[in-house]
Structures are given as C-alpha cells and as structure tokens.
Length: 260
Ligand code: 13P
Image 1 (tube, helix red, strand yellow):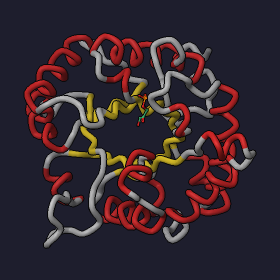
Image 2 (cartoon, rainbow, N blue to C red):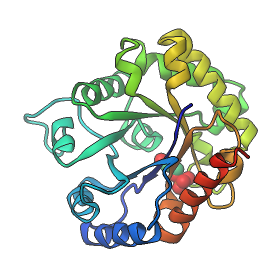
Image 3 (cartoon, protein in one colour):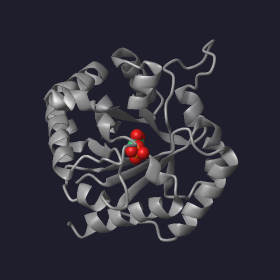
C-alpha cells in the first residue's frame, strides 16, 4: 500500500521571512498532523534555511527543493547542487516541472542528469511529466507521457528507481483553475504505471507514488484521491495559503483513511 504524499510547490513565492511565518502558522494549524499522509513543502532556495529552522528536526513536514543542477560544484553561476540541498535538510527535489521545461528549456537528457544527481546524493526526485492541451486534443497524451518517462528514466536500474516519485501535471491544468477530472487523472496514472512496469519493473511500477498536480484545491482534492491510483498531490496556488493547504491535508487524510 502506497502512503499518500502531499507536496506544496511554492514556486517563486515568499521571502525567507514570509516563509518562516508561513510554516510556523502551518505547524500550528496541524497541531495533530495526520499520520497517514506524508507532507513536503518546497519553498524557493532562498527560504530553505529559514523554513528548516522553524520546522526543527521533529516536524512531520519535510523539506523539498524545486530544482537542482546535476554537477556537484564548480563554475556554474547561479546554480544549486544536490549536496547543497542535502546539507540544508532537503529530502525531496522536484525535477522537470513544466515551467522549467517551457520557460527555461529543460529537456530529456538534462532532466535525466538531474535525476541521476538526486539519486547519487540521497535526494528523492519528484519527476514532473504531462501533456499540453494541443497534445491532449491530438490524442497523444499516452505517447507524450511514455516518451517523457523513457527519456528521463530508462538508463536507471530498478533498484535506483525505488526512491522515485512521479507527478502527473497536465500543462493545461497548471494555474488555470481547470483541474483534470478524476477519470482523466486515473487514466494518465494507469498509463504511467504501465510504462514504468516495462521501463523499470512491475515491482517498481507498483511501488512508485504517482501524484496529480494542476489546479488542486480544497474543492477537488477528495475526488482526486478517491482512486487508489492517485497517491497524492503536487499543489501550487492552493499551498500558498495556510488555511487552504491545511484543509487539503486534512481532507487527504480523511479521504484515504475512510476509503472513499
Ligand atoms: P497549481 O496548483 O497552481 O495549478 O500548480 C500546480 C503545479 O504546477 C504544482 O507543481
């Protein structure tokens, strides 16, 4: 049984001091954090240290980063490496988000190298994949997902892939208020699992958490998690407000524990 994972991707929001205040409030909202849900926040690099300090070592809220560079150190102005993130207490790192692909030209091999760096330094990569609206309307969603998995993951052994998480984020659903339906998410997750079974192994396909991301709110989280194909959510806008993020977390734990 895969436990639920809820990840807040803050994107380029909140200064270090705003971030510290936010996680302080979030911790108070979650005075009894659900044990059935694993929680991660992914602030900007500049806020990782202040968030870590507020959370302390006992918090159930874990730290993630939004990106990394594949080299360990050197003349790479503006980049951040896996060991740097590890040293700040990060456990997870989001890789290949569609905003990075679209706005910063990230592609298959670069994404593969980033995943390799995450694995090499003990970080859990969250690989983001998803189709554009044009690709969906052309009927090529499955092909796009399959290609994105192959180009980023086919060089790894099944053992290495054991700590991988995948986030299915259809581009047309990100920041648009138009979430995928539960049926659309489930169909995509089934495709991803089938591709993983052949690319890695049936065991890896069974074990890998597949999150849904794209306009997740307090209104649709329960429906999205009603299928056991959806192992959690990668949340953008709705994770920036304490009440809304805390509500999503509570709803996630309730939904799964009563097996809706
Ligand atoms: P929204 O939840 O704002 O649509 O963003 C989703 C996302 O990109 C999370 O990585």
